[in-house]
Length: 182
Image (tube, rainbow, N blue to C red; front, side):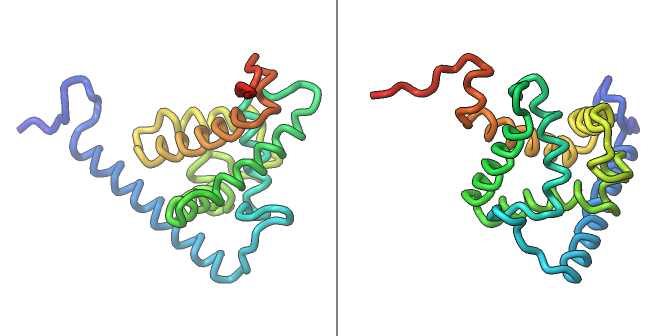
């Protein structure tokens, strides 16, 4: 009996089951660690935010500029990142409760030290991570064999891009004159 899933796929059934089991273990561990962490701490939004928490902000402040590399204005990229974070927070507010919960769980996975290292390869704090380290993590997730990591990459990058390009601050960078005025 041939154990190969398809010709040229490079993966057999046993490897697929191992990857699936590994993904399930990572998710279970993440959920358990996040549950314990949130059980012992009071989770409140960061000052000035509706949903984003203090634990999310260092990670997002490092990821947003990497995801928007080349699109941020050179004169004030920090203000553009902060505007993107506010827009992301507002977007979270308009999601269904289950989608919001999943988004915040993704942020937990990336923010908690116990899960960040094994899943991203960034073992230190986000503030200490180099741009190259973050690019490598994003590329690894984008091209992962685990669908869950590819979905996490897609959710994160699409959310940031959607928010950024909806902001008037981004329009000049891409030559968009803005919506028609009637």
